[in-house]
Length: 157
Image 1 (tube, one colour):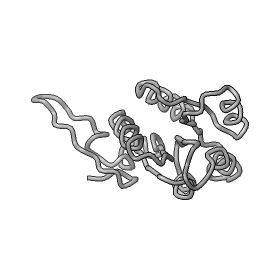
Image 2 (cartoon, rainbow, N blue to C red; image 1 turned 180 degrees about the vertical axis):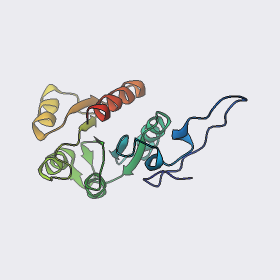
Image 3 (tube, helix red, strand yellow; image 1 turned 135 degrees about the vertical axis):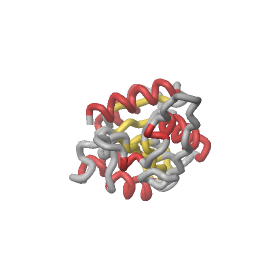
Image 4 (cartoon, rainbow, N blue to C red; image 1 turned 60 degrees about the vertical axis):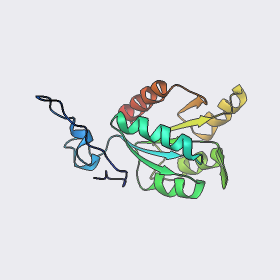
């Protein structure tokens, strides 16, 4: 079974008498009343980081579309997202420029952008905010913190 982004969804086995969570059984786009919520685009080139973040967010009920390059990330974000997670160090482009580009496009101008980067200087965080980022999280970070921030930004979107 796959969600609206083509990501495999593994149904959770319910214990006797339990009702399984619908977000684990149905594509996200088919959940009544939540069609426009919880869609996250992850723009990250490291496959290990992609896997860990995607798994954690999917387990938290989000639908995640992974883009391993700047070009694919721009395309994915412009097709619709409730939140963009953006790494700054990409092999084919600068994350800050991607952030600026997303802010200039009407389809993504109000989409929250959470930068996830190993750049930890205050100046880097300032440049991220100036480029249009909503939030900034320094790697390595707690996955619980990431999920919490994603929930907050999607709720506000």
